[in-house]
Length: 94
Image (cartoon, rainbow, N blue to C red; front, side, top):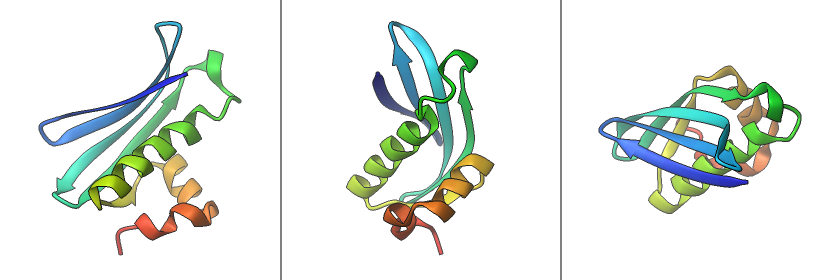
């Protein structure tokens, strides 16, 4: 599974690909130099049940830690994961 992050202007996304097929996508808006808002997560039906959403979230978390960025998870999936996973709650925008 290949995981990439791309940003353009004030938006970005993490994408999961396998064999040149998109498995999932998590999008975010750049709300400032040290703040992003995760606003959407989608996983292709073929890849459901393979933790693609969680992998995408952790890819964004890794990038946020490197850049010292806080996260607001507006997306219902990301919000639920932030409530459940103690190891990423330090990145929540207060």
